[in-house]
Image (cartoon, rainbow, N blue to C red):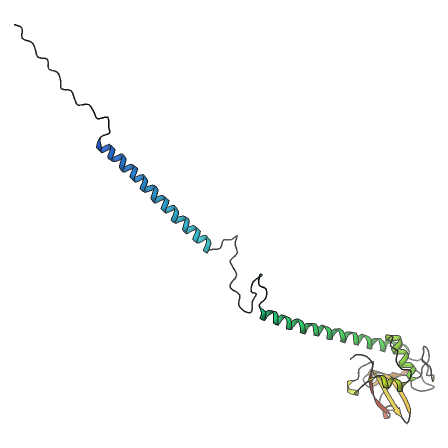
Amino acid sequence: MTTATALSVPAMEPALDPVDPPSVRTSLRTGRADRRVTAALSAVTIAIATALIWALASATPTSAEPQAAPTPTADRLAGPDVGLHPRVRQVDAVAMTMRSKELARAQREARAASMRAQVLRVARNQLGDPYRAGAAGPNAFDCGGFTQFVFGRALGMDIARTSRGQYQQVERIKKSQARPGDLVFFFEGGAHHVGIYLGDGKMIDAPNPGEAVSVNPISGSWWGRSFTGMGRLLPA
């Protein structure tokens, strides 16, 4: 009897689980969790950095944006949208008023000086013209005719013909206040005379028959002894 030989069949290894082993699954889950944490931390870091940059940019002026001016005081400008502080406006208004008055006074003085210079220029142009009673120019004069002619030719002023009439027209002033271009008056016993003051105690006038328009003192002569006063027709 033939004895059947037993065939030794090797034991079959169990089939691998198609699912990843527990250690691999754990590693994958841990890796995904780490990436999520890292992403979250990165987002937080970026947010914090952005906030810091924004805060620094708002607090520190750049080269393109000039630094804001300090808060103005009461004596400074209050800003272009507000204008000058009331105190500054008041000071400026007072200064402008004073400046306007100074300019107006300077203009008056310049005009008066010009008028006086013109009177003296015309008067000197007549030096040497003869005296003639009742004459009022242009080539011969008595005293009142001479002053009437000079003021009319120089300034277009129409003043009285006689010295006594002119004395009624002028503003009476002291000798110490007299300026070139003012009038000098003399009276004695009904006689009368007038000349144009030159300054330094001198006048230009048409003095007497037989004489000519000339420069004479207002004192130390008959005229000086008969001196009545000074009169003004022109602005001071």
